[in-house]
Structures are given as structure tokens and as C-alpha cells.
Length: 350
Image (cartoon, rainbow, N blue to C red; front, side, top):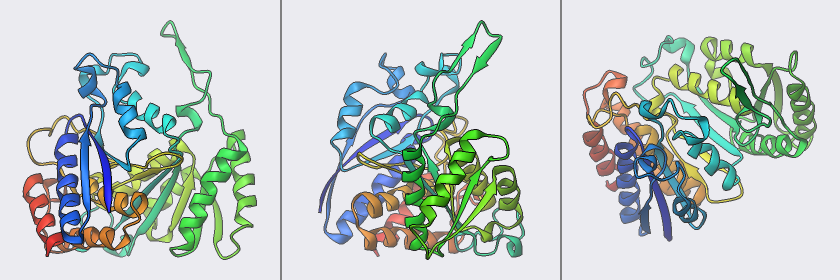
């Protein structure tokens, strides 16, 4: 297979972890007889420092014609005083919207050897293996009107339509069919009108999937249950902000945000990135956990390039290093980002 992958290293530890993921993808290409080309472009603070907008036009153009996009992270404290539209993070909102990436898949599972890595006892954590399906282009993050007035009053709008809810619900139910066949739809219908519409439409869509069990849960109850019984979840589907928060909580439960990959899918090329942020405090120190980015590469293989065997090979390599206790410091280990990457690459080749 020939595939063109656009790489957006971004800020902080982004260049380190995308380099790790690229090295693993290169190893996959060599082992399985594929040809991947990598085209690197600026985004976020890295673009702003070159006097460019957070999402430069040529970056967007390159992404639109790619087979897949690999992103590191965006954000830097030096830009925190800028208006929202001029901060690095605005690039993420723009690229998701411009490419029509409405479905964000965030898996969280317990990897071999990491049963004690999180804050929960192993008997509580169990065999946690959940998938958060987050609606990505609606809700408070995109709703209009929005604004701030003289530093005294601010407002945001949460807005959802039937088509938006139907399409993300179908993504969740389809994913559940390939797993344990359970969907938990999370909302706040006792307070929010958008959540009442959400619950009603998800229930309608569920009728198309009679083999998949549907449960509804309020977001506060869900947040509590993730810490009390995370293994009770299979697929969680929810709106933009709730999904952002709950998936980070799931990452903490299984040991570290550094472990979590994600895939943003929709109308255009898929975008794949680790869930963690730019972590400027550890940038350049070779201590970042590359696993989230490497597993994002596995999701790229599976969802963008339809290479299931290759994706499984990457996941198997990651499982073997965690089982052997080869871990970065966020998981209590001493391995550097580059050393752990080399180990994963060697096991993919093997």
C-alpha cells in the first residue's frame, strides 16, 4: 500500500511523540511491505512563532489531500493571554470543523503489567476496556453566539441538531456491535434541553440496533461510576464537552493520559493524536510517554488505511513492553521516550 501521512508535530512534547509514532509506522511499512510517506507541517504555537495563524492555509490544504493525519499536541503558556481565536488550541477546533471530523474515538484499557499503575485497586479496575465516542464538532465548543463583555459577562451556547446526534449515535452503536454490544449514552437531561433531545434521538437510533443494549446515564453519575466500576462500561457515547472530560478521567483510571490514543473521523481524512496535551514542563527532556502517540498510529492503520493486521501488530508490541515493565516515568519507570520507542520498533520488526 502507498499512503501519504501528514504529520503535525505541534508544541511541547508533540514533536517527540509524533517522531516516535512515525518511527513505529515506518517499521510497520518495512515489515509488511507498504510505503508510507510523511509530510510535516506547522500547527498551533509552532505556526504562531513563524508569524502564521494557528492553522496555516497550507497546513489545511495538505491535510485535505492526505490519506491520514498524525498530530502531536498544541498549546503553550506563552500564548495564554491571546484571544481564543488566536491561541494554538483554536487550530484544533478549526481543523476538526474544516475536515468534518465529527466523531472522536477514545479507547481506554488496562495494558498488561499496568494493573497497579492507576489509583484504583486491581480488583476494582478489573479488565477495563472502554471506548468513549465523543461528538466533536457541536456543543459548547462551537455554539453561537458566544463572547465576553468588558470582562464582566461571558456567554457560550450549547446547540445540537437531530442530524448531529443521529450520526454520532450510529458511530457508537456500530462500534458496540464489534465489541461487547453495550452502549451507555451520557447526558444531563434533568437540566439541559439539548440533553433531552439527545436522549430522545439516541433512543430512536437504538431501535436500528436491536442486538446492542442501550443504557442512559447522567454525566455526574457516569463520572462517579468510572471511578467505582470502570469495567462495567463498554462504549460510552456523549456530547463534546462531557466526552472531553470523561475520556480524561478514563485515562487517569487506567494509569496515565500518556497511554491514551484517539481517532477523529468524519467526512475528510482522519486525524489521529494522543489524548494528552503539550506538557511544556517536560518538553525536550526525552521523558514523555510515546505510547499514546504510538497507539494513535495503530488507530491510523486500522481506521484510515484499513490495515487491521498491522494495527494489531503495533498493539501487540506495546502490550509486550508494558508487560515487561519497560515504562516511562509517568508510569513509575525509568525508560526515556526515545529508548521505549526503539524497543517498540524492534518488537514490531520481530
